[in-house]
Image (cartoon, rainbow, N blue to C red; front, side, top):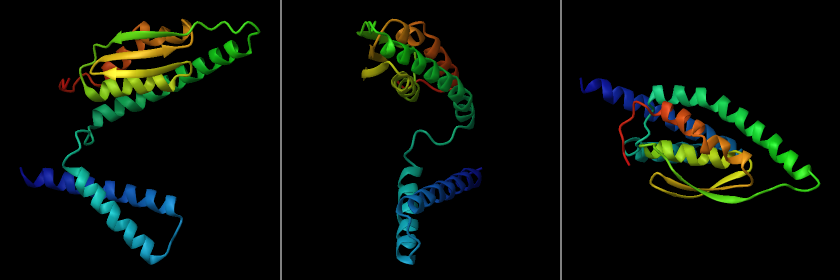
Length: 168
């Protein structure tokens, strides 16, 4: 039983190293042997240091649910972009900015982070502060805050992390 987790973690270490190395090559745009060797060594070191300490080791159910969430989030980003464009182009500039204090029912750190980032990615809103499961969000008007005030976004994120153990 102990050999299977090692092979999975060594396979994950290899994949993480290769992903970091490809990223290194793309950023450095250098194919000299010195740079390639240095990149491979650094990629392996970073992957090795992070392999045992990362609480977000691949959990395929979570990642597959995130992949389902992303198109919905893109739709909301486009919808909010159009709404914000309408506000900006309106001659009267009908904005009503406000800070909203939210208490989330999410019980996983990664879920709260995803929630805060999703709010910030949506035009017209910014997550200004996060403390455990309490968020302070700036919204440019009432319509911009509807997705998170109605708990629709939070509900979708809770579905992603429904099998995860609480860590708040």
